[in-house]
Length: 99
Length: 452
Image (cartoon, rainbow over all chains, first blue to last red; front, side, top):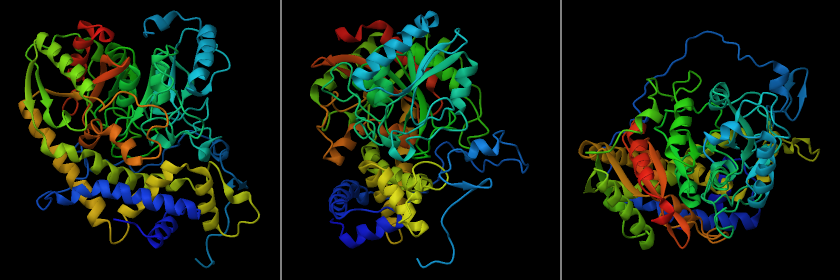
């Protein structure tokens, strides 16, 4: 099944990925190939199958509700931030803009 | 090089050799300038998607090219306590996505046994390092065969434990329900030694399993008389190269000679493992890689004054930072979980995964372990599959099932075809690492695999 350019553009938007026209073509074709391959799953009968979600049977692994110091100073943690100010990570404005 | 031999190494010599040979095959992404002040350590190399404070962790991606983690992975701390020292980080497919190490943003790694061929992936650097003799062992990760397949292609031993056996804290998340850390070494015994150290519950990994860690190096020395070995019918025949099958069947005969009882067994849903994987994994990837947005760490397109909005910053950062395979998988995963497609793809794949798990559960009521070739072919040539993603994915045809079912699996070399190694894969039920490695060790000790 061939994936249309519109669908590719929609997915790229959801995934926050800028694609060139050449990439849209290439990925469109490649994704179609891959989906063709995985489509064999459509023929299986899964009506009685329950997704247990966790392959080793673990359930509800909770942590105690207490504050634990991670042991790493703030300056260390901020070292990788591309832009920072006054001990905070700085980004462009998130609110009050058109999508 | 065995771990025992590595105990008395001249670390300067070790580093020089690692750098020169490492360069020949493009194995290393970082390496120590000089040995540590404490000389009484055993050096090793680790895959560059496991975080270390002493070296960058790039995941072979431009988006993390200069990233230095503020913390060490749990496995790194455990090995440090046990007297092991990281001498460098090895190359991989970008974000561990790939089967040939041709997806690295920092160059391909060549197979030391034949530099015109791939070392496998995604832990190609780790397997090549062991095969090239520049490290006694390596620690790497396996999501659909990324430890076992390169181990098979390079003629070394690679072990993927039960899901949850080894803490994933500090392993850069790719497909969180499938990723596991494990050792690559020149012998099963060495893998057992490392696995014993790195296994165990970790409160920092909510998926890690509680329960005692057996003395693996002791356990593997017992014999395999009476062990029931199931030969997976679906993993032989169509899609598998005949010369590879021949070597593996020869190895299975050897297991029989060693006292194992061999039976044929069929797991009808197991053939859907790779397709299932190629929906579940990209779906998890699309979620796990959303964090690479140029905000907290890594490459950021935000400093460009021409970028107006934060969304534009996200899109440009990710376009610049990710390679094609990563983009492909993010796209596929986004598609498979998007409104209108989620039922047909992701939810269905999750249920098929349950069917596959049930098949394995049934099988392990009849047999103790399952065997198969590790890969359908020997190491393919560099460049051979880069333009055909589906052909590339099929390298993991026989290794993906163990990740889907969360079960332990090991690859040991069992012969040569066209002078390239063939891997024998042994799988067992969850938490049966002792048994799986016992079978591998007994086999390994009874033959010189290069003569098979």
